[in-house]
Length: 160
Length: 160
DNA sequence: GCTCAGCAATTGATAGGTCAGCAATTGATA
DNA sequence: TATCAATTGCTGACCTATCAATTGCTGAGC
Image 1: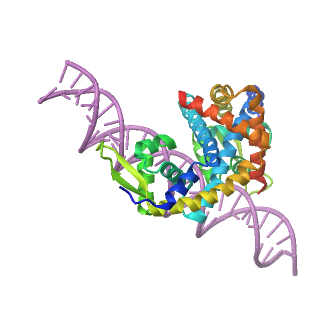
Image 2: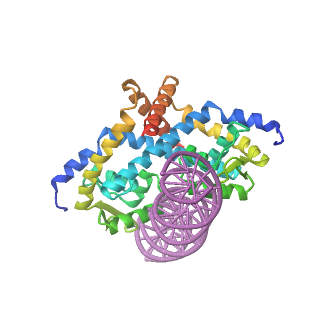
């Protein structure tokens, strides 16, 4: 039998806190959702979820010049993380690097034709999974509340 | 000037889909929230967020026998991921491995006194950050809706 | 009892991130 | 104009997850 420490009780109480539970739920749901999408995307389109997010950003406004820095900020990655991600995407022909005309330090990234084609296919797959596990399970009246709340959380995180 | 592909339009439309936006919001908010907690926990308590989650699980019901398998399932990690995580936690004295009496294949994990002490401190830090970025930004009426929705999503993911 | 399908944990190889530090470039300012 | 802090992307070292293969143990069917 183990020695009983008076911290045990306090620790158990802390571990049962509803805050801990609710927050854990968010993290777990998001993690698992991303894993699921990632797996499907890899199998069906041979790209990772992160690559998919790059393609979303690049295809969003055709004609817009997007630098690696911008990509890093938008995807919440470090600049070295983006460098390597773009490296991989470039070697499989999804994107292309173009020197920026205005600022010779920075590099613009654009989707290739192949990148756009893959993106279209991936978007369909993505929509299917998101519909099934993200939209369908939630009561219709709660969906907008949830996304609204997430928006507020995101804003709070961005402000500081 | 770049050749104009008729896919551009379709791709742009797909990239602007509200589903893509909403889902992205969940992933981004969760990722950033976890990063923030992780940073604070590392600085204040010298543990990672994942280690914190292990401690939550271990301190939750003192006396319960928790195997590595169970931890892996509860934290959504692979068994090899858990093996290495417990390795690291063991070397810094947060947990202890104990051979399972009933089944010699499996290994039970328990928090050390030090582990519990660190956990108590970490829980306080955690609560502070969660309160600030997860609870405070959300309108009071929406909080339960949001966590309820996340619960449903989690259930849908667990069922399949 | 004996065998063998299956599970738990571990280990080796690999993927894909982080961080620290570098060279090139820019733009503000003395 | 010469200088210098700030910024961009790149690279090396490292961290931590995954998958695949391996080992030891269990329990069901014969």
